[in-house]
Image (cartoon, rainbow, N blue to C red; front, side, top):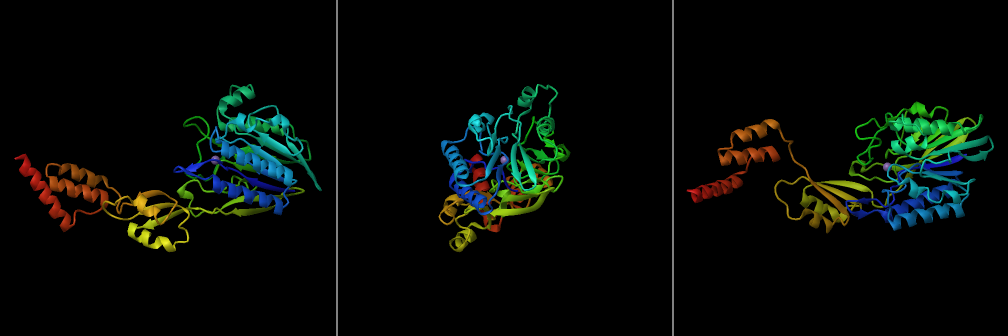
Length: 381
Ligand SMILES: [Mn+2]
């Protein structure tokens, strides 16, 4: 049996106010193509379908038409859950109309803990879909006021799901959680109560032959090789620039996972960082193969620059962020020394320049500064 595992689509997300919807439509085409070309039995989307609790009309339409296309034009089952970015009720709104033999989309914690059952030559595979749930929602749903952490929520969901799986079935769990030991990026939103422990131990999934996780945006195993994050389908922060995103194609044999393959996803405008002096970047831009990428420019120039974003846009149309790189990091001793010299304006300015850019004024700058300071002193007198 073949499962295609993906997660963290964050449909409708913007990056520095730039819409990513067209990029995401391109990724949906790649997911659809993979479902067809690998003839997968089930497509799994492990949460964070949308980027926000109230997704835009365009994002909802994109998702809806994608699901309809998979349902009508392929034979794949569809399993999806709400993640911590999704509003449970908006994900699960048409649950009663779902084709129980092929579709299991769960938003809220409800009475549908029963798994989707699929058959192959080796028997039955039970796929449990466990939507992300807040602690207070779980207390109510499980009538258990002792639930106090994401680990407690997951334990309650797993116990309920496990009770529905019969002896001899292979069990696949789909969940949205932070499993101990996972590597984060800058863009996952913390789970659980403020400041509380947000992780879940991998042992909670004992008995499952594959765990399809969402939440962490890098593809990785967590605690065991069969407990995996597919990772997000595209980078959402410049710390992920240059990283390859993928879906995980999982093949189940008679005893569980028999093969794992990463299917790379290509983004037409990948997140890209370019570092250099403004003039260098402007000169290199026209021949830069990545000029249409989503760019963060790190400028190494000293001193003032006139509208660097506007200048860069003329060469890199999708530059989203401009950052200045300081040559030397600030030292506390330098700052303290500057305070001691505050009675002498020239020493104060020299100390300031040394602190923020690593060296004092040049001879030309010194001449201008001395003339200015002398002029101001004369005015005061
Ligand atoms: Mn996410």
